[in-house]
Image (cartoon, rainbow, N blue to C red; front, side):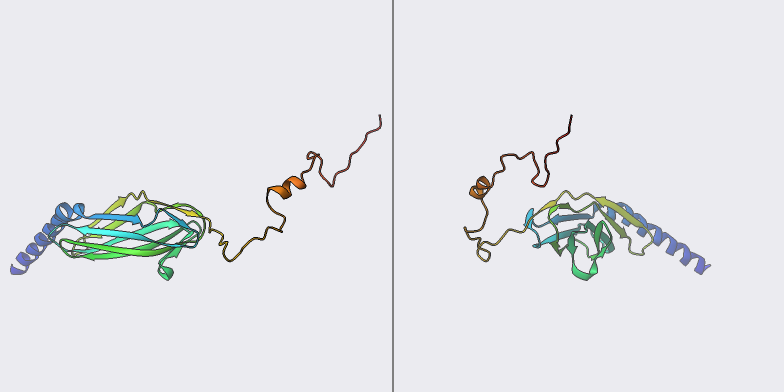
Length: 189
């Protein structure tokens, strides 16, 4: 009889724990992801900053997020996974009560273009791991990767080279509609 009573009390405790996490803890978690710079040059580094806040009075034992970007953004070295189109990196957080955690990932742009972080799915569980909560976080930050500028201090172009407007005017082709390798063909008739 005592074993049945203890079993019922354990089930009631598990039910109450799930109910508390479901209604009072998990919906109030806040997650944000931002890119540290707006414009960079090709090959430069920047940071992707994740911020997780737990404003409630209970701990959050497990919160997992996965950042997905273009394959031309190199993330975190060896810990990221890549395929033909995307590169992704996962984060795992364990947050105390009333705590804010900020994690930044070093990233580098490999190719020029306009890139963004895709929508992030976060998955959190309760203390016992019986109830799972998932949400999609929209990230609106973009980064514009410009071509690498030419360093004129190390590669000075001399004026004697055939370049610029004067050279183009000198070699202007008066009959531009004829290709230099084509010859006129006359038809008898």
